[in-house]
Image (cartoon, rainbow, N blue to C red):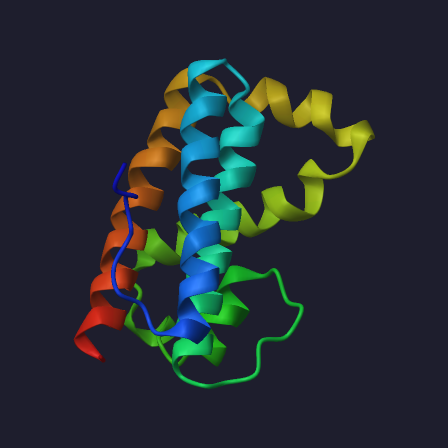
Length: 139
């Protein structure tokens, strides 16, 4: 089965994009099972790993950073994001930090329903498509 964001990526980026595809499939599976908080968490992971694929593609150091805006800045593309994308990545960065701690899971879960999770999936897919096209153009 062909992966959603599959391409002939060079080796440094390929392992990151393999993870992107796995996490993207996981996000969709979580949506089907109603685990909406984890849909959002996986959307954050998909974007984070795509940005790290771009850094790997650029032969830049990949630091253990999870804040999406900072990763986009390191990749030299943050300035190309419109306001909607900046809002998306700031929102998702917050879910990475919060989704890992049990005491906040219940509160966060109440804020994310089926519609919100689907919206995150749609926006994430659009951003990943744009980012991967940008990387392809650099090959």
